[in-house]
Image (cartoon, rainbow over all chains, first blue to last red; front, side, top):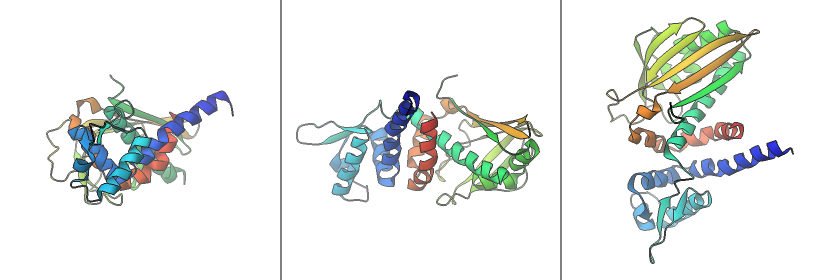
Length: 114
Length: 151
């Protein structure tokens, strides 16, 4: 593999876990709440989540290993917060918009080239 | 113009410009690839109502405000992107401008799509991308992967 290709591959590998980690309704909801309300404890995040505390903990670990959230433990209480560098809000939104357009362009291509 | 204000995509399609234009300017054909059902034809200066046809989003309706139609060259509209909450009145909020430009290239067509004006949107709207449910992200994972590989 050439150095350029290897750099591109490593960049993709770096980014994909973020998207994979977000491809789940519960995890999106957790990230959305951390976004709106700031750092929250597992207990608070489990309120109204519609899933068990154990499930929320498991989702938080998935988000943590993708670098989206971080453990900001306060004493014995585990608090999670967003990792801002990894997940810049505006950039993320535009990525989502761009991905929607890519999907539409794929369908347009199939429509006119078919 | 900041980097967070716009997105742009430029692609080459293996189809003549007239064919690509028809797929864009005919509202029924537009809906087929865009993922929506539109009521009536596109008319410059007029709004047109649509309903999302992507599974999971069928309850969502929206309006496109057609700005300019230049046959086989240019098509633009404004809309409220990700106006996903039926209970919210988006009509007073800023819109984004979507522009599609066509150029002929040896029997093929270069299509440039830009969507701009995101910096004017309220911050809460940007967050709404997150509130869209699982389906959108899962369905788009493949596209996203391709997108980031290309970036």
